[in-house]
Amino acid sequence: MKTARRLDHIEPFYVMECAKAADEIARSPLCDPAQGGRPMIYLNIGEPDFTAAPLVVEAAKRCMAEGRTQYTHATGLHGLREDIARWYAQRFGLNIAPERIVVTAGASAALQLITAALVDPGDEVLLPDPSYPCNRHFVAAAGGRAVLLPSGPEHRYQLDAQAVRAAWGQRTRGVLLASPSNPTGTSIARSEMRAIARAVRERGGFTLVDEIYLGLSYDEAFGHSALEHGDDVIAINSFSKYFGMTGWRLGWLVLPPALVPAVEKLAQNLYICASSIAQHAARACFEAESLAEYERRRAAFRERRDFIVPALERLGLPVPVLPDGAFYAYADVTAHAASSWDFCFELMRRAQVALTPGRDFGPAAGERHLRLSFASSMAQLQEAAQRLEQTLRKG
Image 1: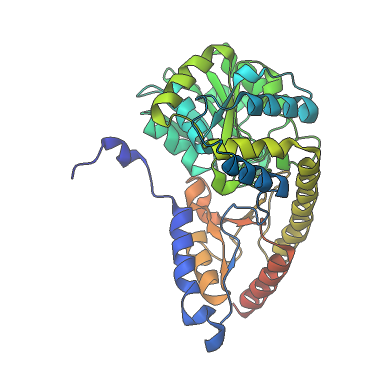
Image 2: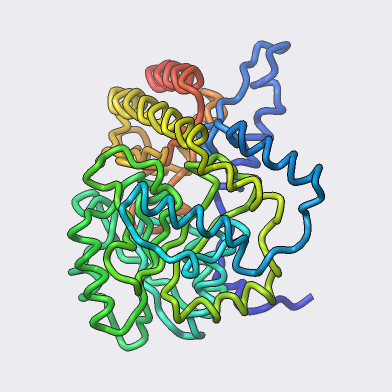
């Protein structure tokens, strides 16, 4: 059957291809204790080992028991939008009107909605290289072209205003940033984000900022929202990472008021509304008890970062920029291999540790880097570090 030409511009999601390979090895004798093997340690997927907070689970149970499972408005429960607005006020000191918030079926739906609303066929959108692969594929699915700009450690693996101005062309429509970023865990400094927003505004473009890891910032110098730089800045966020609700598929957009009707129309047609159960449950995320739990978890992630980054350095896998948020370390494999793809598959087989090669995140330096997710427990990280040391010492 003939498929649409847009698929020609969308690469496989190699993270998931590697995950399938890891699962296959995990079912082999290498990982069978009965045959002298050991279980696979998964440090490849960006999913917190912490799940939904207790009050969220209780709220979901009540919602189902009381039959509150009907469709909601396409923009989401008004109470939830108010809760999110209050969170921005309390956490970031921002006055965001609830009417500017659109609740979505995960951050992925948010990205689909906003690229469909803003990107025409042939439009170009600037992104850093490295960056999360699905972000550029949302641009491609809308008929646009993602332009990847190499962004090395000297720029914290992020775009800066100078790079945006230099790359802006006749077909450029806007920028798609992520702060903190996947795969590097690095953020854009406040002054640089302000300069980028200004440069884009002067050119009549849009600034989209993926902030799904913003709650997991570890450094006050970076823990700010791009929304403070103007009502025309668009933020994408999620209940998956900081709030631990990955499989619930719930996110949101903060939009300029004029864009809300367009995005609402798209949401009505593409998926009607986000899960009503997830929305009702998510309101419990903003209870004081839940917020205190998320802050305990954030501290645990920081502790894991402070363990694994020096451990990687000792193994000859330097992390050029300390991650200031999220739960990823982007390590340079040059001392051990010419290809991070081959290196990661070798470690799966020899050390039974699953890591993600850099291929997904952009061509500039993907072969030289791997991504490690420290979303797993400290015990798992310690065991993984020990296995890697034993394996790499043998050569």
